Image (cartoon, helix red, strand yellow):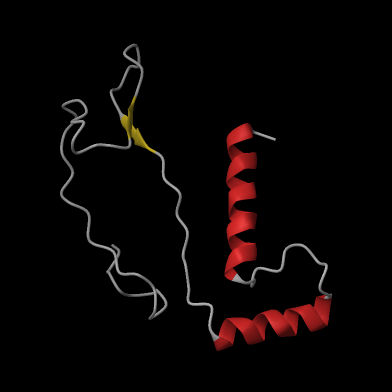
Length: 104
């Protein structure tokens, strides 16, 4: 059982507990705006939800120091350093999503 607010960084956005599950009655467009229904011929009626989940943290002194330390250790031209400035992060994230959608 997940307890809200535990095992998350203190500066993480707080979520809300899920509403109680409801049985399948079809998609309610005003409520289920991201819902994708299973095919009509599927043996079990299901609704799928696709979402991007990303944890954003404040890019403050700690993150800047971490980036500087990793740059000194690995060099400035190394791909894969997870700590980066917001502009670089945004560009990298958009490239990742584009590749995932294209399937390359």
